Image (cartoon, rainbow, N blue to C red; front, side):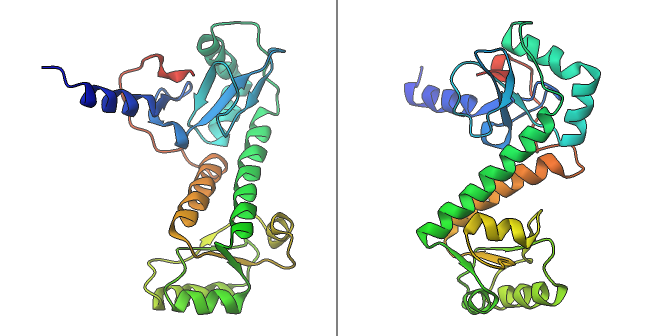
Length: 227
């Protein structure tokens, strides 16, 4: 007997996945990067997946993406995904995607700072970490080793696992994003806020760091590479 509830759940789960047009692998749409086709035929990053119309999804890192672009594989895959040859792919599309992912993370940090879920300042973070209030700790790439070590230790004292994550950028970027001076370390003191920031950070790092892109589960190819 058909169960309408189970069918709706299955449909919702299916709708949450998309297929990378370059690797053919499937992953949650929130872990992939959407490309949108503009009215002028220009392909542009749509990392927040808000642009209207058809979309194409990628789940590979910058190195693989740039190689596919240079060899023409990307344009061929986009032509099939968008079902049109009337499109243009800029040679710096990979750079634009990287910039968009970085901006998404920095915007998220700014939102969390304004909502009061984010701490800066070594002493404030250390106190909160020792109390077990820190759910995510970030260090600027140019943070001193001693400062990182002390905060990581405070995190463990408070019951946190592992250590802080290195933000792929220097303190000047964090300072500008938050409108504060000399931001070297950042702590998220709300669990949901930490998850939001971690997700944005993981998407950026998956694209820029030498790897095979975001994790994806191989499945039978279907039409979920678009929309």
